[in-house]
Image 1 (tube, rainbow, N blue to C red):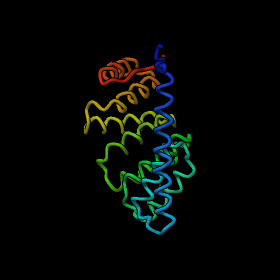
Image 2: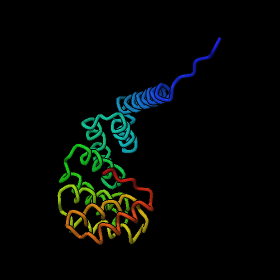
Image 3: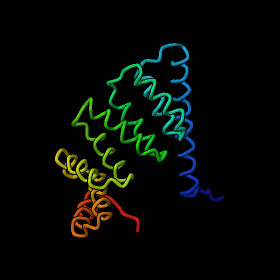
Length: 178
C-alpha cells in the first residue's frame, strides 16, 4: 500500500487555513477583552492589527482610531492606520496619518517610508523623493525606499537616477514585475 503525500498546493492551503484560524482565535480573545472593559490602547491596537491581517479594513480603522483616542502618542497605531488607508487607496488620509506619526517621532523610519510611498501614489513625486531620501539617510539600504525612489524618478523621466535606484533596490532584494 502506497502512502499518498499532499501536494505543495494542498500543504500551503492547509497552512493558510491554520494561520487564519489562529488569527481569528486571537481576534476573538481581543474582542472579549474590549467587551469586558479591559481594552487599553495596546489591546485596541492589537485588535486593529488583527483585523488588518484578516483583511477587514473598516474594523481595523475603528480599532486603531480607538487606540489613538486612548493614547494619541501611540505611534504604531498611527502608522498602521496609515497603512490601512493606503491599502484602501485613500492616499491623502495615509499621508495625513504618517505626518501625524512623524510629528510624534520625526525619525520613525516606517512612517517616513510610508509617507514617501503614499506621496508616490498621489503623483507627488518630488515630495516623495525628498521623504525617501531622508529614509536613506537613516537606513541606506531600505528596500522600500529604494524601490519608491526608482518609481518616482522613473515617473519624472530621470532615467539615469531611476536606473541607479533600480539597481540598488534589486541589490537590496526587491524583485520588480515587468
